[in-house]
Length: 180
Image 1 (cartoon, rainbow, N blue to C red):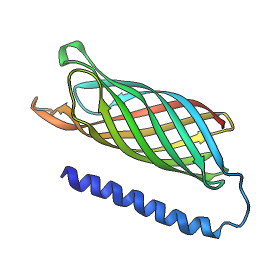
Image 2 (image 1 turned 180 degrees about the vertical axis):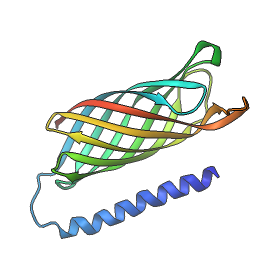
Image 3 (image 1 turned 90 degrees about the vertical axis):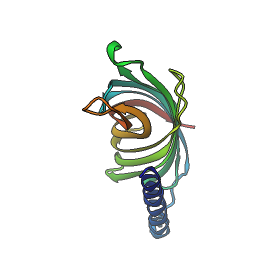
């Protein structure tokens, strides 16, 4: 099941990148390609037990391919909090790559990222595949976005109390970015 999800995510990312090539060939206006760097804070709600809340900070490097399409590399630190009676918090470092597409007024965008989450707390050492679709609004310096992030291999607790697998979070990100 895990392998099927990973193959599906990889296929969708490849399909998005291939469709981007066709759109890029149709654009005729010149655009000043370049790098942007953004630093963000995010907070959210974990969608599976035993986790309750999520908090994180990140750095995102973005390369603008055209006025509407960019590729992204994102890393940082996230923590999934649990109540004291449910165990220990799970802290991890995400490493993601993705595609950002501005869809309205060159400010509203859709973003899809995929990568790995490397746990760094609680003697837990199972690296997890992660996928993260989102929507956002960006100006010259400010970036506000909402995303869902799924970690396929992180431990959870099912409703009947048995161990499960596959945690997620819904998060809001506020970032400051600038051209390099």
